[in-house]
Length: 282
Ligand code: PAF
Image (cartoon, rainbow, N blue to C red; front, side):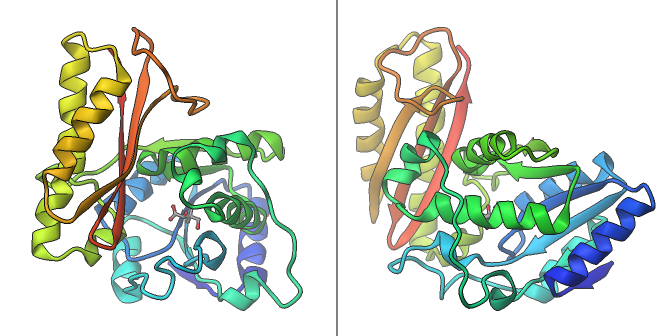
């Protein structure tokens, strides 16, 4: 497994592989890998000849009041997991290499970024779109895997790939959950034991909604009220949003029909912001 620390090294490595006729699959991450990330690597491994993992905590996708400085990191464990998952190159850039002094260009996503998390994290998706665009140009992959846990991010990346003419297959990886249903996230590490119990309320709310919809409930507002009350019955929880939306454009829906619906939610448990979602097919 090669470790490449600069964009020049990464570009040279990818260029060489391409010259040799090899294909490259790419999994971008911010590190502190867990089973969710490993499942993305496992999904990507058979797709191409080479598998590249990037680890970079991208400052431009955090607002000043968010957890950039506290973001967890364990590079030794990340490298062990990467090797086990069959990664052939790890890209570990420094901030100044990706954002040198004088950097000023931003990729601004369109209306997809205005819904769900975009309402609460105003700079987030421009930061994601910018760094993903840069990483695509540096790694030059044929395929890239993104998790469905960040469903809105996945849709925005699909759209930017189309809009900016990247010839990259965007592949979705399923949400991986703890035994009790909590979606895997690096941010789960922030939770105290008591908050960890409250965090279960997210996946339980998704399951409750799914059951009610399968039983015939069609009113998103009614469900939102019930789900918010359920989540708030757990200690230290504050719902940021609960949305029923169309899974492609992420627009709110006013009535649940036989069409697939995305139920997405964001909840603060203490200071930790958790997101989760499920696609419901009646
Ligand atoms: O999903 C993430 O970990 C990040 O948003 C990504 C895609 C690596 C961009 O920084």
